[in-house]
Length: 225
Ligand code: AP5
Image (cartoon, rainbow, N blue to C red; front, side, top):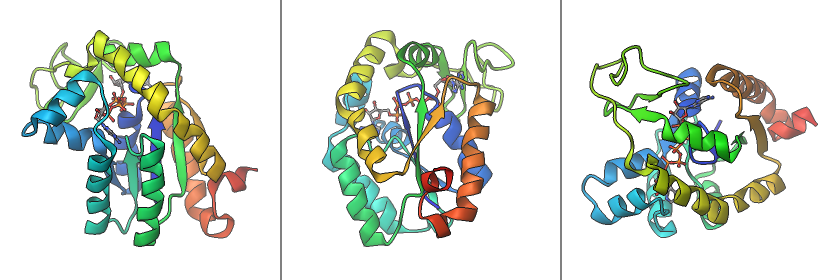
């Protein structure tokens, strides 16, 4: 089964995505992670990320197209951070058709702006990939990664002025996707105001039901209708 996780910047998509792919053996396709890797050698990408702007659609679409064509996704995948514009969603539909693949559900992690801002400004990350929050998910030793012991850092785009820009970009370019996916009946609203574990329980419960029923019902929402 293949899934999409979406929501405001800082909603907790990445946190849930890590748990979901581990729990369900899926491949994590995070465009944010891919671009954070790419920015090390690409100044244009680096500037776009630092300012909170989106990378142009054609670059993102090509990247995902290549990844889907590469294969090794038999057990399913979770798209995190893609699609982010209606154009990207339309192109994804075409790509999936070519690859004979389907999306089983789109999980929308629903949080309010204030909560998203709190989560972003308190986020601290490690170069090993681990992520924490100074208040909500603190490391055992302040400022140090629990896994590798390195110093934790704040992402460039988590500084307050850039966060404001990211939220504006989201409102203009990404929010229309909610209606796009509501029309397909794949859209599932997840209460993102809960803690990490409760959110994972909501999503995993739906995925377990989905695994059993999707062949008969065609989509997750039909099962709960
Ligand atoms: P991306 O990395 O996708 O950024 P984002 O969507 O802004 O999402 P974040 O990574 O900021 O937040 P998240 O929802 O994953 O939250 P997290 O789990 O970390 O993209 C970065 C950039 O790349 C974009 O700005 C753009 O430039 C470019 N890009 C990427 N994809 C693109 C695309 N398709 N098209 C064009 N450009 C693209 O959690 C946040 C914090 O909250 C953490 O500290 C966490 O510990 C904490 N937390 C998590 N869950 C909870 C909880 N339940 N309760 C309390 N705290 C929590």
